[in-house]
Image 1 (cartoon, rainbow, N blue to C red):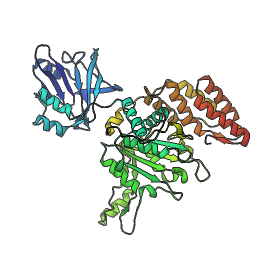
Image 2: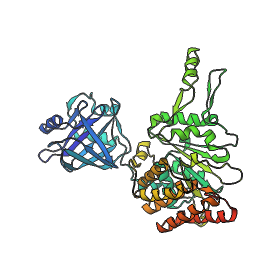
Image 3: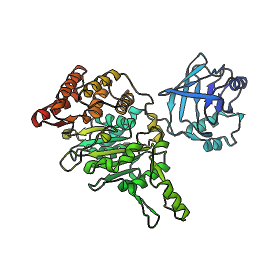
Image 4: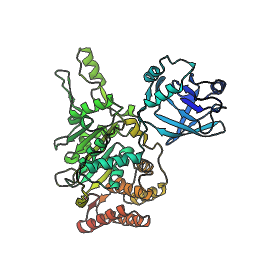
Length: 493
C-alpha cells in the first residue's frame, strides 16, 4: 500500500508504499519507522500487515497506525496474488477515522487500470526491496498517471450506454437497461425473452459496444434445433488423429481467458430452439461457482490426456477450460411453437427479462456516436456488490411459504441471488422496484400447473397488492386468467 499526506512543516508529499506478498497487516514497528522519516519512502515489509475490504469502497487497516496516519490522509493499496506482488490498486483512499487500533479508509477516487509491479519498477527505475526507499512526488504522479484517468461512476457509465444506444437509432427504457445491467452484475447469465424482432439480441450487442467491447470481443451464436449435447459449443476430441476439434464458442472462451483485462460477451441467439440443459449444462454448473478458478469445464479426461501425451500427440488444447470472470452470457428466447420449454435448472440460474412490446413512437433518429470509451473488466467488476441485501428476507420467506403449499418452494440459490440483485441495484433502482422485478423474474417463471395451484396464485396476488408490486401483480392476473380459461397456466405468454 502507498500512504501519502501533505506535511504542514515540509513541502511535498510524505509517501509510504508497502509492497508485500500474501496478506498485509499494518504493524507498529513499520509505522514507527515511518513516523521518524522526513521524506517520501517506499517500504517493503514481510508478511506482517493486513488490510481488509468491509464494503463497497471501504477498507480497514486492522492494527494501530500510530501517528503515521491521520484523518484526511490519502492511501493507495498494493494488491498481491498468492505470495507474489501483483499491482497497485487503481484507487485512491482517504482516511475516514481511526478508532480502537482500526483505521478506516474510504475510496476517494477510482481509476481505470491498476499498476503492475513491472511498471512500478520502471517508473521508479530501481529494484523494490524490503526496507525503505525514497519516492518523489513526481514519481507518485507518474504512477497515478498510469492508471488511465478517473473511472466513470456507475450512473455515468449507464448514461453513456443510453446515449450510445439512442445514437444507433434504438430505444430501451431506463428500467430495462438498468435491469439488464444489474442482472449481469448479479450473475453473468441473463435470459431475454419475448417476441421476435423486439431488440433482445440487439440490447446485448449495443451494451457491449457502448462499453468498448464490440468486434472480436462480442460473439453471437445462432442456436440450432439439433444441438443435443455440448460438443456444439466445446468441440470434441478426434480419437483417430488425437487432435481436438474446437468450435467458435470454445475459441472465444480461450481468447477471453487469455485477455482478462477486457470484457467478452457471448450471446446465444434463440437458445431454446434446442433444450438448453442439453448443450449448456456444463456452463450452468460452472457459473454457480463464485471463484473463477473453480469454473472449470473438462474437455479431455486426465487419463485420455496422459495417453495422448505418452503417444506423442498434442491435442492442441488443455485438458480443461476455465469460464473466466470477464465473460458475460446472454441468451435470447422466443416463446412459440418452434421452441423448447425452459427447465427449472435453467430458470433457477438466470434472470429472465421480457420483451413483448416496442415503443415505436420513441425510436430516435440516428446521430453521431458519443466519444468512445473502453471499460476494463476490473472497472466493470468494481461496480459489483460484495454483500447481499437482506432487507426483503421476510418477504421472500413469506412467498416461499405460499409456494411450499403447492410443492413449488424456493431454494437457497434463488434466495441468495435475489438478495445479491437487490444489493447490486442500489442507487440504480428503487428498492421496491428492484424487489418487484425479482419476484417477476426469479420466482414467477417457476410457477406452472393446473387448478391445484389456484390457491397459491390467489395468495401471491394478495401479497403483490399488499406490498405494491404492480409488475408481478399484473403477470399473476394474466396467469390466473389463463388458468381459468385453459385449466393450465405458466409464466410464459
